[in-house]
Image 1 (tube, rainbow, N blue to C red):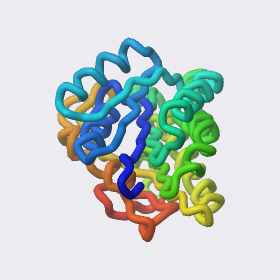
Image 2 (spheres, helix red, strand yellow):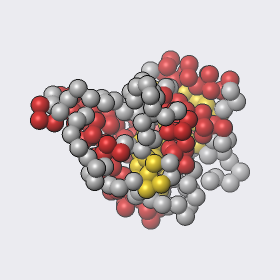
Image 3 (cartoon, one colour):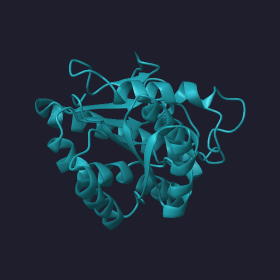
Image 4 (tube, helix red, strand yellow):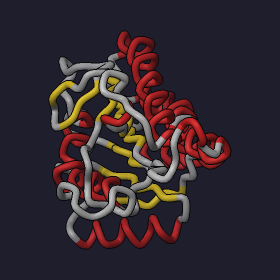
Length: 235
């Protein structure tokens, strides 16, 4: 994507689960990977383990709930690399299986929205100048089929509503940035066996692969889409 230079990719919530595996796979493809976590020590530990496997992985502290943190991470990225090619908005919380919309604790819903919707929004705004400084920007919002209005049912209201709103953000950003060559897509990794997803899901590497697909699209690739495993999902 960037000629002879390494592609610079940043992954939020990269210290565990799907985010960590996305970092590993991007590193295996030769990307310079910025692995972020709310805690710098957590990012450092995960990055060190991935570097031991051969990846060019660098730790960055980034709390997506904190605008100042996102802006500081963007400043560090500019100072070290001068640009960003790929932004993977992966950090998420609150798979609230115990709740129903009719009786939901709205404080839980608001907390989920702060991370799952406003978090990617803040992060994208902070890093957009760096994405514009590159030539082939990609933004991947990690979503969920639970957010599909076509098939939406009851349950997990905080998670579902925040991810549906994230899909709306994907559509808006894709329309606004299309002319600049920045591709913006939502990706559902499927039910994956992680701390959030619980046991019984598909292997993490399979869920991460669809995110990596969207992160490495050619310039002629789609934008404003909702995908799983590279195939369209209904909105």
